Image (tube, rainbow, N blue to C red; front, top):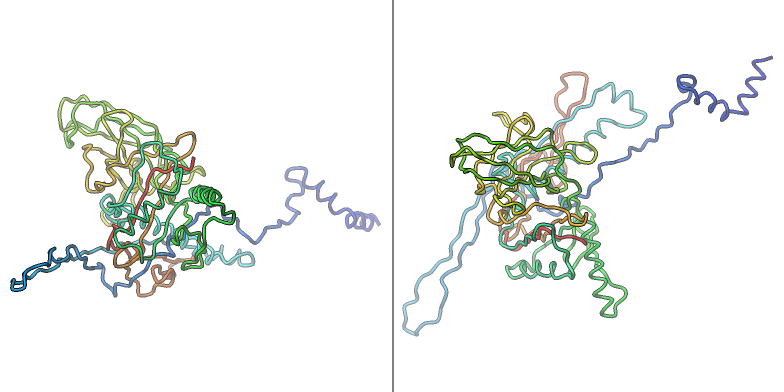
Length: 470
């Protein structure tokens, strides 16, 4: 009788009973089933359409890609007399080579997890997709910021290649007041033959909004109220805004979102092995991440007093650089230095990783191994056009950023990505995903690419560094 009355009461008051059981810890919580939504919220979103615009070219199995450049046309002047002897002239060419580099990652999922979660999600497929996304992030980073001279396992990116057409704004950045900065990029590219080529602008969403505001103001001043940017569609289904018929890639790889986070210690690295004399040296260091170069640490100094001209400086971090979510995300560090406070320029780029003799990542540079500065003269990892770089520092809380015009022509541009990959299954064959042999109670897989960027002709591209939206 009591049981029947209770059941009737319970069926009519489910919410009340549930509330009563869950208000006390360890009382009724275990009786209430979870309502787990079968959608996983993605908290690591980033824009990465760059992978869709390049032109992949299979090398046919070679580990290097060779191509020829015309470096000089036949001699000038062809006017001469009727009976003159016509001199023989010739053009000149140059054979160039790029080495393909290895980019890969491995993941695994236990069979127990796969079986236990099968009604909710295919965890092996989900984890493979996450590895593939991060692999694409790696590729885009190397395409933009790779530096084979500072890390032999990377290939060079377009920021290092673009040396002819570049603008490096002063420390703190500059705010564009009109669209001449885009026109200047187009004009420089057109002057070198880029007009008929497939090209894209790259800029942050914030900079695109700035461009849109400036363009709208111009159109309104001309009495046009419908204007703005046109739209074009590129490979991969990306629908992009365009300026003067050149698509604008909206990317998160060009705008700093964080500041160098570790505590940095500078000290004398000894009186031998370097070429530094007694003096006070000023430094700022910035990490380079998937989001591009970040804001530099505030200026610090170290004084050498060893009495020789062969001293060097030792740099140590108390931790790896981390983002706002405390995730380690540095891939390289840029070191700015000077003997004058506030005048630091880029002298060195180092990998965020240390490697063993086989090229396996063995630790974190600056943490597991000290970084040494032997000279303020930039080495080959900092080409002449990058020696003008100054640290990125915010002004009024607004960070300076970069904007580029990338000529994607494979012959007279920077759009060709040679690769070798017999089983390429993703992104035009650039990426292979494959299962690995079963050796235990888990599923293993590999994601890999063997590729590089061909520096066919950099003069039709442009890199503008240090712009601010306000």
